[in-house]
Length: 383
Image (cartoon, rainbow, N blue to C red; front, side, top):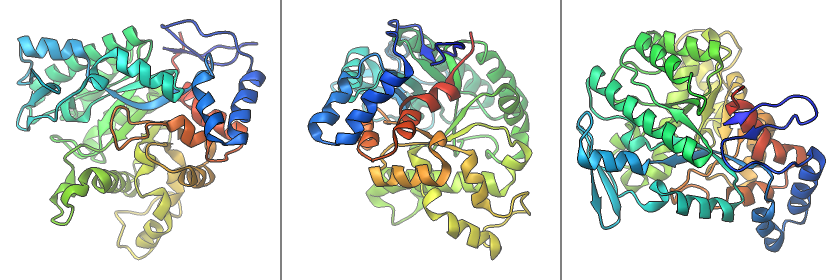
């Protein structure tokens, strides 16, 4: 876990896992600056040599192998698993079989090899959205998320990482109670919610007020992630672009709804993370404001003048963004609101996220914030 330290060694360290070498702030900055300044392939390759420097990937997925092995023997809440030539397949209640799950998603060896090559030293582990939930009743959904969270906790501890928890959201009071119990686990550093839950109320529904209230009071980060099969799948023209643009559209629409329904007015202290660079929102902010002005994007009057005024309250990952897009995002919301993300192990993510950030030409303190300090502060847990 991340332990926030005070005094002379004010940098956060992540444990359990191999002890971090003692690195003073200035030498760490200097090495990152030198790699960023030269911006050649040879120098960017040196990222993997910046060992001992904590570089945190805030968006990485895992399906614990122990969970798959258990499901292969005894199904849980209708979830089962079977080995196939490409790895594993999970049968999800009401959804059918998942895509094959390969070793990069399940095994520590390929994950460690990729991290070493990419220059990442720690990950915040997220569940795979395809198995986070199924078409389940409230009781079965709670039983499943309980087993999923146990497996995520076990993986986080064994990998020297932290993990994002899952809760069933059919009942806001129960979801808050479940999250409160999970937050007692030191390896749990936040919550992942689907932007479009399969069952229960929409995220902006007042029924989920207890969950938002607890997260705000306890300072629990919440990552909002679109599902694989979201509303954009209903578009007749989406074709094979669902994973390319559909996820971004689903993210954009869901977060827009949260803003327009006043979630951040009611809970201004929430720490919400938007994946995939926030979808289209930061890059089309004026269009959203125009819709609010013309009442085409309007639910009720907001406390702030425009919807885009709330965009600086979110955190954003760098997944699949170009260097130029990262520079724009950093200028729009501030470097302190941007997190390194890979979307590991998916091909549409960024296979070299550190290289992308270093090659963007940001200032050294902005680079340091994105690669390390923002995630350390957001997902850090006091001992």
